[in-house]
Image 1 (tube, rainbow, N blue to C red):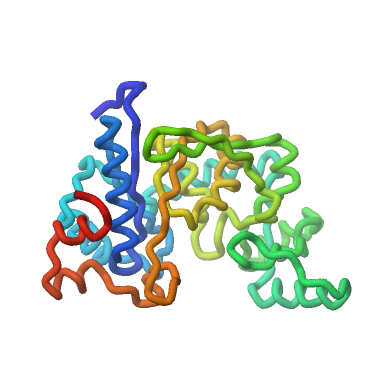
Image 2: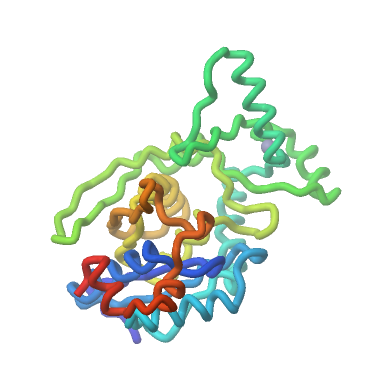
Length: 294
Ligand SMILES: [Zn+2]
């Protein structure tokens, strides 16, 4: 279905690397409610760039869970693993402008470099909003010939955004946050707090940040509705949108569900899945009501 210019477009974008839990249901239902109240379209995107952990079986399971909850999406689903070419084109554009550089550091190498910096300064090294140490810049100024030779020799590497140069080129960036009553607020992005983020991983030629920005634009998404945990990362996304000449959607960040100990629900912590709840006799209506959707 073609979208009229004024018709809002929403998307729910899960990763098929585990079963969906209540937090996913909340996110999907919030998207559904926004779309319904604004006469918008609702798209499903499968974020499966992690080729080791994502499986078709889990994708089918999450689609079954969403159908069980009564969520309807447009039939055309975008699967990120089928679009590595799109991400490569975007990366090449950034590379041509010297905005990304190869980094050969292992995780341990970054840790060692950070420890050395801390020993030198006697102060803790800064961390990004997710709590990870900022990349210390080891490979930022490597000689081009050296870099080319190491890549030609097959040395594994990631591609990092040169954040200083990216900010200099993008200028001041902001995004608009909308609440469920339609009130908006402009937020100034602070991308520097993320440092030189990875845009292409060792194992796949893209990253969460790059894929999500490209896909939102390619799918014509006008409203990104996602959890509060992704609010800070939006700083990176708006910089990439600016650098790649893509529109910045409106954003809404919903609250996160937490477990009894106050931690965010997560597949990795074994939070109870929708499938578990269903097996215990919960109905879709009960789940919707529990999450505040009638
Ligand atoms: Zn490096």
